[in-house]
Amino acid sequence: MKKVKFFRIAVSAAAFIAVLLGFSGFLPGIAPLCKGAFFPALTAGALTALFWILLALLWGRVFCSWGCPLGFIQDAAGFFGKLLLKRKNTYRPPRALLRYTAGTFLLVLFMAGAAGAAGWFEPFSVAGRGFNALFRPLVQWIGNHTNWWHFSEFSPAAMAVVIVSGVFVAGIAGAAFFRERLFCNTLCPAGFLLGIFSRLACFKLKIGEKCVKCRACEKVCKAGCIDVSSGAVDSERCLVCGNCLGVCRFSGLEHARAMPKLLPDRPVEPDPKRRAFLAGILLAGAAGTAGAVGVKKLSPLPEKLPCAPPGAGKIADFNARCTGCQLCIANCPGKALTPAVLEFGLAGFGQPRMSTAGGFCDYECNRCSNICPSGALQPLALEVKKRCKVGSVSWFRNLCVVVTDEESCGACAEHCPTGALTMVDYKNGLTIPSVTPELCIGCGGCEYICPVRPRRAVAVTGVREQKLIAAAAPKKAPPKPPVPKPAEQNKEFPF
Image 1 (cartoon, one colour):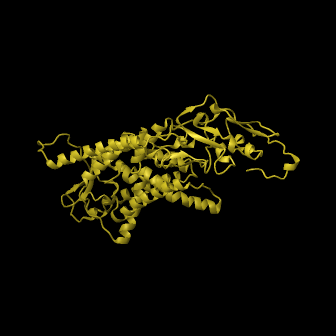
Image 2 (cartoon, one colour):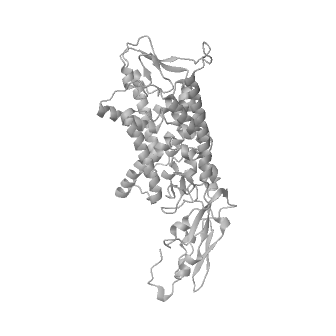
Image 3 (spheres, helix red, strand yellow):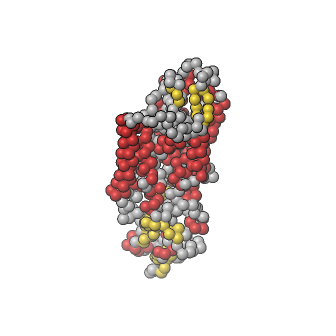
């Protein structure tokens, strides 16, 4: 049965590499594969979530060992932990109260519209933020030294989010180094939910009559769920990894048919511990609801909003559904997306927002809305995305170099793809910008290219609900700059 173990390692490694490359940013064709992760698919209502649930109902928590990128990270850390510490696993009693209260609390947060807060414990989003914090800098370093690729730098505030994300993943990996899948069976909402389904699995791992109690299976069980002394396997914690089957030399373990009994054989006596257990779950559910309401009430959307990625729709709904996995940030070719700190309020911490510090939204790109795994961004066809109004532009006359320095510019109008900014006659042969708000989609190209510092003469602010403009104007040719006077021939162009 060693083939099961090695096949599982091959499949989980392939899934991990696919997700890792999806977050690298330079292979956008792989990014849509990330929609197969269990919890984002469940949030989006995708069929892949049903696929993992059906597998759990058949064999148990298959996703946790076969398809979870964070699980692969923990397996790698656990492998080196056993190698360096000469550690062997043992059976560990289930921490049911901790697992059920934490799982209930996080699931209620998701259902109550606080996905951003709960997403800090959702395994795919945790792994994705870790890839952005730890892997993408490596890709950036390669790009800067070999000219393969280039990433813009995050702002100092956004870097704080990136650092927190990296430390969080490192902490989970560190816990796995000493005790393998500790996170999976205590704080992971995906593991909690799939564990409930695995209790009803048709085929479960069982200790058979041929077992000689050598405990080899206990020593390799990542979840610590095999108790040879009592001859029982905790199917709710079992990760279906195949490690135990690979080391058993006496065929003492098997996946046997085990239809669950819906009713007990005899009346169940009242148990004070069970009552305390149920009370803990109810309290966790109430705390999750209160936490979600508190996050929304104590941190409402600010008056001045940043631009959310195209496809977000209502910003309140976007914040409620986005888990902050940052897949869109990693795959933005215009380098326009960055992690939010408090720009969306506390509920939007770590979620993507548009920033012109490193780039602007590419008019010919609709990648972010089509790779979002959680459904927080609705898929937009390119022609629809070109009409999606994510923000509005404002022009500040008293800051424009044409007015302050009487220098010819027009950079904002040259980079406006919809004609929302045009140049009109000013004086002395110069032209100044004129804004048509109903044509602006908020791409930020004008703000990004504006040469005025520190405060730019054009600025784009977000809208509370994204809508489509009436019609996208065709991209026009850049206006010709006015012919400078003879005395101005040697003056440097302002950008």
